[in-house]
Structures are given as structure tokens and as C-alpha cells.
Length: 406
Image 1: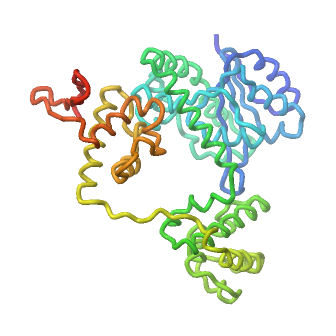
Image 2 (image 1 turned 180 degrees about the vertical axis):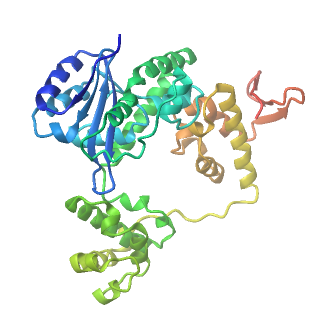
């Protein structure tokens, strides 16, 4: 029997839907939004499904009614499991509109990587892998703010939650069989902390601008203050950050701080209309930043030249990570990044206390301790010529560990 489907465009219909959702132990959730024209992406649709019903909520249409508050209560109910796929942006939007992050949640993209289905697998690919069903992605670039929406658009949007609960069942069983449910919970907690970081702005936003760490400390202070100013201005006007001042222009202003409006007008990429609107404010921010004492400047990591053996050691660690990943049927990129391995190699003392994901929780158990032993010279490696597998033995242990072919 097919699951009933609805397109919710009124507060009354949303209230009726909430009554059916309230007793469900879990919800499949997804969103469609438009982010090109506003500071906070404009939420257009919310797709939701249970085992018995599936619906699309037209968010602008129901926003004026009080029923949306009841919906957020359900979404944030700690007794209800929320299932999402690649859900960071969805969780961000829910946190903005509901005022908190919906918990608990299960991200099928993260879980898929932990059972060997590949890193950052797309939803359509996951549906095909698990269900053998090929989804129609014809409306990937739909303008979801345009009304009315066609039946094809609504059907496309609904597919994003139609299979989520069955995928959740499949992945939960696989994680349980592999003994990795706790691993997945750790990853969901990491995602939750990242969602929370988006609201701890604007003073840290400058660190997301590529090239900030190549600036001198005083220039980095100018960039930090300008970026914080831009954050507030973009939020006030509800426009994208780049509509106020682009990242590369902020870097230019930080490297060569202007002191007068005439100098501002010579900066390439800084629109005259923005100078007319906010030139004095930008100059004031720059002067305030330049007046800061050195103790208030950002701390930049000292550039270290890799030692001659550094690259070779990183490559060795990458081989170990890949070997462990193959043995455990897990995505190597989920275990450690090249930057993490480089930092592990560069630090000579107290490596085990570094604040790196690979030295925490399940990653440390699976590969972190082995990497530390390798760098401390406690591990000997050999290659089985017949099976082409890497083998290693630890001097403090009596057994060998074997991995699959790299």
C-alpha cells in the first residue's frame, strides 16, 4: 500500500500533519532552500517522512501561522530520531528557525562512509547502492522560490526523504554488525559541534578566508575586524557576504590598509556604491584595528620548513592509514587528512597529546596508536610477496597484524 503524500500550504494542514508526526519514533528530513540572495539561506520546502506518511511543507506559505512552532517542537523532540543525508545545511537551517539543533540525529552520508560505501556519497548513489533504484535528478538546479511548483518538482523533492528511513535501517544494521554504532555517534557529535560553530561568529569568521594565515599578524588583525564588520552588515541587510565586500577585497584591504576615502576608491573590486554607503565605517574599523596592541593581534602559526625526511614519513603514515581503512572497509579520508599526518610528523615531542581527530575516540583505537608507534620506531613493516599485503609487527606485542593489499 503506497504511503499517503501531501503538499502542505496552510497552517490547518500543518497542524493536522503534526498530529500524525508526533507519535513517530523517527522522522526523515530534508530541505530545499535558496541561498544566493540572502545572508541566511531562504528556506522554501521541508520534506518529512515517517513509515506511514510523507509530506512537503511549503515553508513561506505556513510561516505566518502558529502551527510552525508545533512542527519545530516535534523536530526538536529528543524522543524522536531525525534522519538526514549530508545534513549540515539542513541542521543549520533548523537551528536558525527552531532556535536549537534537532537532536538526536543520524546522518546517512556519515554512516555510509563508516561501512565502506565511500566518503561523501551522494544520496542518489546511496539509494542505488542500497535499493537498486535510480533517481531522476532533473530538478537539481530548480529555483525553489518560484511558485507554483510543478508536480514533477514536488515528486523530485519528496524522493529525498522517501528512501531515508529504509537506508537508516540498512546502515544501522551494518554499523551494529561491525560494532561501529558508537563510532557513528561520535561522528554525529562532531557534526553537531560544527553546526554550533556557525553561530559563534563573527570574530572567528576571518579564519575561513583563504590566505588569512599568510598575512602578518597586524594585517591579520585588520582582516579580523573587517570581516566581523562585514558579517554584521550582511546580516543587517540580509544579503550574501560577498554582496557587501568579497573575500579577496578584504585581504587586499588588510595587506594595504587605506586611510582615506580616495584610497578606498582605488581598491579594485570595491564597488563605489558600497564606498558611498559604508566607506567611513570601513575606514573607522581599519583605524581601530591598526591601533590594537600586538597582544590583541591574531596568533599565526610559525611557518616550518619540512625536514628532508618529512614527506617520506607522511607517505608512510598515509600507507598505514590506507591499509587500516582497507582492512576495516572504511573510507581512508574518514580516518585522517594529509594535514593531520603532516602535523603528527612535524611535532617531535608529546605527539600523543595533540588535538587531532585521529588521536581521539575510535580513530585513535583503530589507527592513531599505530601511527604513534610507527613514528616512535616501534613498528617493523614487511610485504608478503604472494598476497601483496603489508604486515607489521609491534615490538611490545607478540602477534602480527595483517592488512589487505594497498
